[in-house]
Length: 55
Image (cartoon, one colour):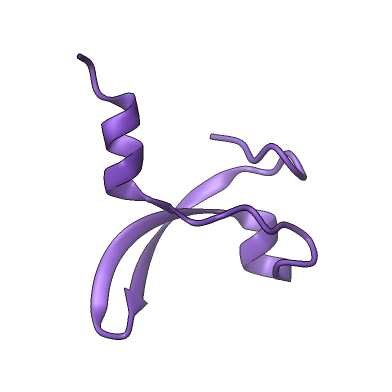
């Protein structure tokens, strides 16, 4: 999956947000350089699976 802004790839990350663990996908540019480089939102794994699953 590619980001529409800088064109970099999204990668899966295990996220621990205040004790709640989840799997998310984030743009590599945003992860490495912050929102100045890419302000694309974080995508939850569950949301992505829901969009990609077969009907």
